[in-house]
Structure formats: structure tokens, C-alpha cells
Length: 355
Image (cartoon, rainbow, N blue to C red):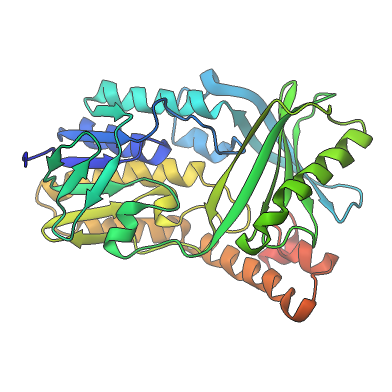
């Protein structure tokens, strides 16, 4: 067994790359690994980021496909309800991830792709897919909704949404993200997010309806083709899971090794919208800082990290969990949510924010 780095980061998505960069800039020896061969690929993301992220990151213009200024919500096929001043940007997620991992590398982190976590035991001893065995001081789990690091420390995302997404031609430019709410999408919704001449068209549902995803996505695609909004071609397909159970305990220990979770591994994706890039980026930076502080002798740094995540995301995640569960309750005993319930369960409507 080698002594290993000060900090081992598992996952080089937005959370892991930001954690690696922040810790490396603080002078720590950082090894960050990712099982993927290429940063950000395959893309498993709708690729929208809110304007809030501009306060956290510079350089996003280089990976921006187009700006967004409005959210249009269609409830059971009715005319769109428009929420203006809904600002953000559509990004090239693969380029975004590649840029963040390059920032981490330039900061001094050893970033290795095509390298997976093979195992982690209850003493914090880590085995990698290349056969090496490491004993890091801190492990940061940024390895997604089904995090192996989280499982090792007992923090597991038990509520997920399954998604499927196609890239399709967009027949006319638009500056809005389109949201489709329907009782046909239990535990989720449909979306059309523009990226210049193409758009990401997707559907998410609770796992029990996963088998219906292909038909639901095909039906939404056909509807938008009939309306003349998108072309029939499917240029790419993707999909994945999103944690929707709310925040997990983001800190723990395996033997003497401190463990921190960030991003989806910590359950920070919004349980209603599924949005997680901003939370991943912010939590990753905080995790890297907390890890560096703990190694420098601040014994309270892990708890401080947990407190910061709760202050930033706790209230909004708790509200989203409540709204999502309220909506799912409508399906009990063969029931279905009506349009009033669908609106209460979505962020564009005042009822969502009511007590």
C-alpha cells in the first residue's frame, strides 16, 4: 500500500473538479480520478445552468451555446404560462466538464481519467482499477447519485428519477426553456431546452414508470413535430438517474479517513427540477476547502462544511421534497394529480412557494 495523496477525489464532474482545484490551490496533494475516458462524456444532463452560477465561475462564455431568459410551462397541453426574467445559459456540458478538470490540473491536482474506484473498506483504504492501493487523508465522493463512496459511509440516495433525453433539430430559435407538466409523467416532467439550432428534449419519471419512458418521450417528440416546433430526426440519445430525496449527511469517517460528499453524491440536486450543476460546483469548492482546512488542523472543518451546505441548500431542498411527495401522493389508489396540484408542484407558480 502506498501512502497516497492528502486528498483523493472520486469523480471529475463539476463537483469533483472544483473540489480538486480548491484543495490543490490550498497546497494539498490531490489525486482525482474518473472512470470515464473523456471528461463529461457521455453527457447525461439537460445542460441548463442558472445565472446564479456566474457568481461562482468565470469563463463560462467559452462553453455557452445560448442564453435563456424565460421559462414557459405547459400544463396538460394548455397554453404556456410564462415566467420572465428566468435567466441562465445552455452549455456544452462535455466542454464545461473538460474546462473544470483542466482548471484542477493547472492548480496542481493529478487528474486521471479511465481510472475507477475498485473498492473502499471500513478503514478508508482505497483500491483503484489500476491495481494501486492508497491510504489518503481525506476522500471526497463526487461520484454521482449512486455514489460508492456514499454507500461506504452509509449515505445513500434512495429516491431517484429516471430520465431519457434526445437531441432534436429546433425549427425556430427560442430563448425559453419549455417545461411540460402532466399526470402522465409521475414524479417528473418533460422538457425542451434550446441550444441554438438543436434542442434537448427529455422526460423524467419515478422509477416505477421507467418502462414507459421510451413511449412518453416518443409521444412528446411527436406532439412537437406536429406543432412544427422540432424536426423528426433524433441526433443523439442519453439518459440517467437524478437523486430526488433531498440532502444526505455529507460527512463521515472510515477509520481515521475523513469522508466528504459533494454534488449528486450528497443529494443536492433539486428534487423537483432535477437541477444540480450549480449545487455540484458550489459544494465541490466547499468540500475542497473543508478538506484542506481539516488537514491543516481545523478539526471542526467537516462539520462546518455540513453546516454551509445546509445554509445554502437545506430550505430549498426540503421544500422541493415536500412538493414532490405531495404530488406523488395524488397517485395513490389509482388517483391522478389535477392541474391545480401540478402547478403547486412546480417552481414557476406562486402556490409552490406558499406555506
